[in-house]
Image 1 (cartoon, rainbow, N blue to C red):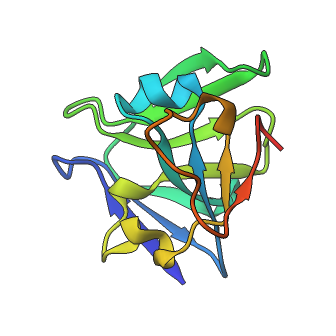
Image 2 (cartoon, rainbow, N blue to C red; image 1 turned 135 degrees about the horizontal axis):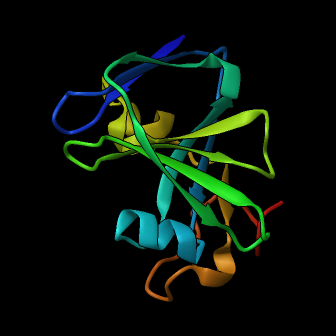
Image 3 (tube, rainbow, N blue to C red; image 1 turned 30 degrees about the vertical axis):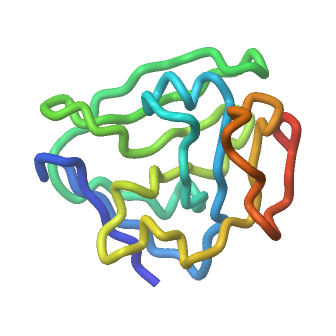
Length: 137
């Protein structure tokens, strides 16, 4: 399947050709700061499958809880967060689900795993059926 997406202004678009993806929520404080929300929702795909098809991204390197770099890619015009490359997962890219086209922000209606549940706000309940990880892996 081909996943496509874009930033809010449409200046940056991307595509990822994948057989399947891991649907993941991350509640770490880095993701909370990155989104301005309680978590990120992600389609985790092979890094080599992601191609920017229009425009040029900007990036910001943050040091994650692991002490490794989390490289955040975003649109330099509208600021939409697009995807993250995490140094501790060198073969994978975390596409921000809200940027996906065609209703894929729903992540197929199922969350496979939640990371950093130790940082999940108390007003949120665990997603039924999702694996719960206190930190990463």
